[in-house]
Image (cartoon, rainbow, N blue to C red):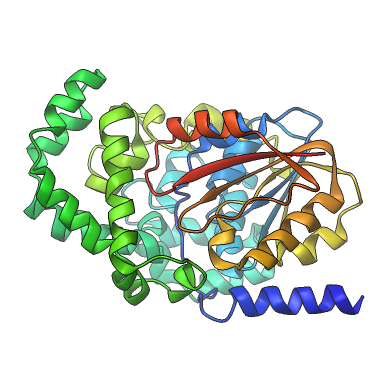
Length: 381
């Protein structure tokens, strides 16, 4: 008991000291839902443990109809965002109003829409949103800490290097060959230098959070250069015409219209899928907690799949292993965990998990988000 308590305290000291969990840090999930679902291979009998983040991938996974999803996050703010989405679905808010409420479509009536959803929210979510009405009014989808940082990049800095005409032509390309031809018209050296600088360790620490690099053994220049290298890989190898992640990164909301272009947005935002979610949301349990604390409340051997997002960016090797072992304790043999790595390398302990190396590399090669250096699929032994 004392050991478990010490581990919980260590995790809190590792993660909660620096990141601010009172604000929306991510108003979108920047982790490819397609490779996530392929990696997890969701079945109707599955009980899923997932990091909440903005709730996008919780809802995307829910569309695969697992038996249950535990959405877990240390951030009350991130869970309040998922609760808002669940509440809107629960009261059968119309699809167009759902998009407006979340800032996924233009609106001047977001606060009115919030008032209609508010009674369906748990008290903590009501209190959070009552204190953050300006975020709703401005459009939640673009008000996360990361999203505001990216907005400065694609509205202020990128246009000085790449014209909007070239960007539009790039995203309108219908083949990889055409896409590469357009991309080669970009001023590539200037683009590489811009990305390397804007996403350097020094810049990210200043604008976002030192905690992201607290355990990363990487120099300032190396961080930005790694981002730039992965950006180029996606630009040259992943079809851009249906890569909404890459478009949002480079162009913001331009060309983005979930109501009329459902294949160019997260699946849960599509009208048909939104209607389907109405019969599924009771399968989601929202938990504000650490993973290690939450698994103590889950019956042993009942979890079959787990999406750990990129949480190991904020932990050292010892705590990362402890989290994996905690999940393993409640996971049935043959269950899977998946997670992304940004800067750190955090292998799951081989004593309890088998690494699906081939599948992991294949799925990472398909990743439409360029941020991550790896995507990992492990199976409980």
